Length: 174
Image (tube, rainbow, N blue to C red; front, side):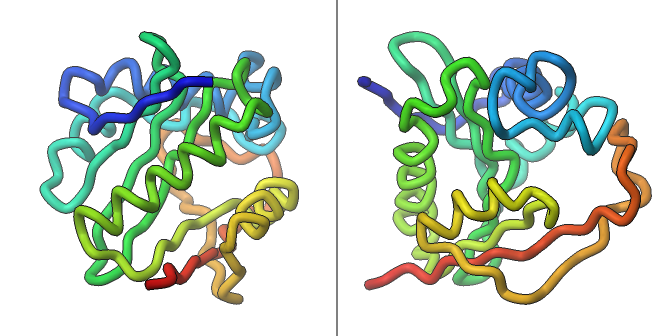
């Protein structure tokens, strides 16, 4: 499968928000394995939030295309000599085809190239064991640190009590 990557522009905000919401929430997300629909109701993000993140000088979205179709997006934020990875999305109908693995590697390479990042961190809802295992198979490890799920998470409404984030990290080899 031929895929290509590029950094997002402000005019990509709406399509990124739509892709993110379709992959994480609602019935459309249930096609893939990364759904949060059994944990949270409401949208994951919106166009305004994505636009602000794109415009932030210390961050970027990397987009993944198959032919002309947008099939993935990921948010990267610089934190000193580390980078944070969030909102990692692959179109639910294209999951399990190896896109995510290639895309994750491209995101890591972009953080190393642009920011000389030596580590990548992320937060994953701790009950998402299958997703955490996916990242562990790609060199990430649980730091032992957790963060509570935010009480004010926009449109996200927990339908499961006690949600928290597990913090994962990957140290890049030189």
